[in-house]
Length: 397
Figure 1: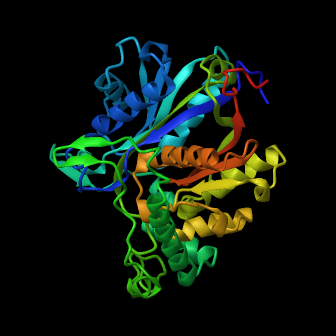
Figure 2: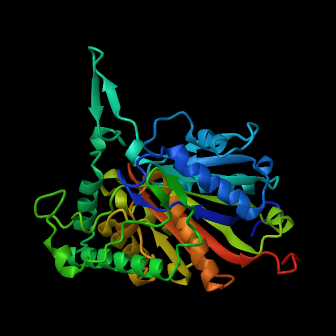
Figure 3: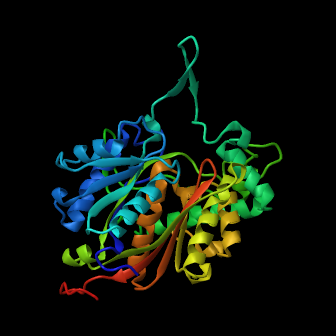
């Protein structure tokens, strides 16, 4: 472990409800989704906004203009606080946290707010300019040169299912379990402590709306292939687009002790890897393999795992490669049930892990956050839950 003044630790994490795109959050732009989360984090940690060194936020389909800076000013931070927006597509939220962790490790005991946000509902229309000056609108950006195939996400999910022989039955079973777990977690109140309510023209939004009560194996079996004739990837075993924001407070272990923080997630290691863009869904597994091998930690030794379930096929392929039983992953459901808010999703994983670790109360437990990324990449982070100070505010050294 690094010295206390350079050991990164996540001491608080919050998210909005994850809601279907063009639904109840359609009137809020990205910075308006994020600002209440930033405010809540300051309140929870009893931090002055003047103590914040920087705000680092991932975003994938926004309109530019540095949404991190826009959101922090919307939240009432002083103009002296800078902001940085990170774009690694689906990995953006997790990569913003990784970047902050690496800067903490450089020294100085800074305090960062890091995470991600996506308002797919209000994302701007995008277009190339034709030779005659007229716009040529496109649905998504180009991720890699066309010589690499540059497949759409659903096509890539089919490629992964075929290449790694992930059956339709396994994909549907994972999707059903995700919905069932998310419903059970919501009923048990597992999400209530991590969700920052949002005020919208339609009222207060403080709960996810994705999990479906009426879903069962028979219903899932009726879905046709969505991306390739005779394929196995369907709307039922794929995520849906969502709007959400999520962020964490990350600082050094020394600074956390000075703040009197009781516990947190130490950032032990991070890794990002590149893979064949045609099989982009396997990227998270390759990143995790490298990271765990470097620390000589078997995947079986990790207690909590959160994987971004963009598609059931890539989730299962990655877990198979890592030797992780899918039953151990996403204990409260994942993106198949909750939805995928692109730039926010990686930060949601970390928020879920902190909540789960605190609920378990198991100091020393290891957590793993994993996300595969458009263009053929993946990011992984290894975390450890530890006590920082006792109830009297005494440091645990």
